[in-house]
Image (cartoon, one colour):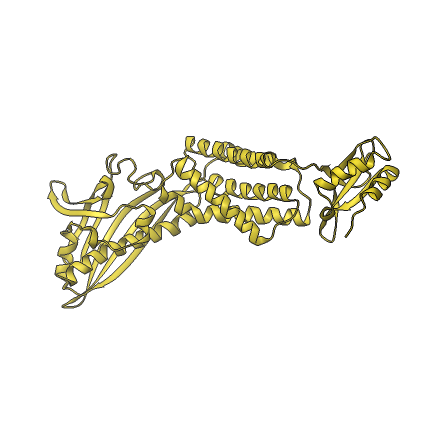
Length: 392
């Protein structure tokens, strides 16, 4: 479609305003109109974005500077540089860092406010800022793509700036991403069906910070159990002896598992001793992790049960993420049982049961990860016993 700039200038000078579709308007035509308008008036003009749309297309309203628009408009439109468009995103990122450091100070990283409210609001605001920047509602595919980049930036920041461990980062990823996408999709619907985005709600970015400060923490204790079993083709007495006499564990004996990719240390040694206080199992993992298991019940070859003893030296700095440290504020191992069932003279069913405590504001989510990690670790340990007994 041919745009007659001189005709637009004539109408604008006489009628004080002129509507034009976004697809017919750019910075080049704006400069042309400035020159053409000088033939009819010395008064400059302003550009507004109409709230009303025509078949989904944005409409700009051109008005002489002295003329007050009578139609529903948003704030004055003028092209801005990439840096200026980026400033709101940088400020939002700064607020994330401020909230994160405050959460660290309050020991609130595992609060619902930080892991759900903050990413939800950030997802909504990133979509809001993107809508303002592009002046159009994004497709769901683009929303997901944008939030993936946001998620990537947040994870990199968590690891390299906030010094979070990979275990926490991987565990938090599904929850954070779901909250980000939920906030973004909700804001997309709001921008598409309720109102057009303006800069009036940027202050909502402070909401998670305020919630983190004023809302009380509601962590509760949840007690769970993980049970795994494995068939071992060896006599019951030999299986019982093997779980008592672990000894040195070679690297090639440890089966591959995703939990080790996440950052959990592998088992490397175990022994059982008779001490003054009773039978004690000493367990060692990679990175200097060392703790004791006090045997509560020892009935060869049917049952072995113990609880755990952790001290300040059990988990050296960096051996585990602070938020998943065993025996800590958020998670603890309570009791573990080995039960052995004789199937025949050469076959034994080994059953491993682990009782634990988890204390967060979203135990429903934490439980999923804990059950998975404990089940995987149980399978690893029982597989070591199975391979040793079956391939002697």
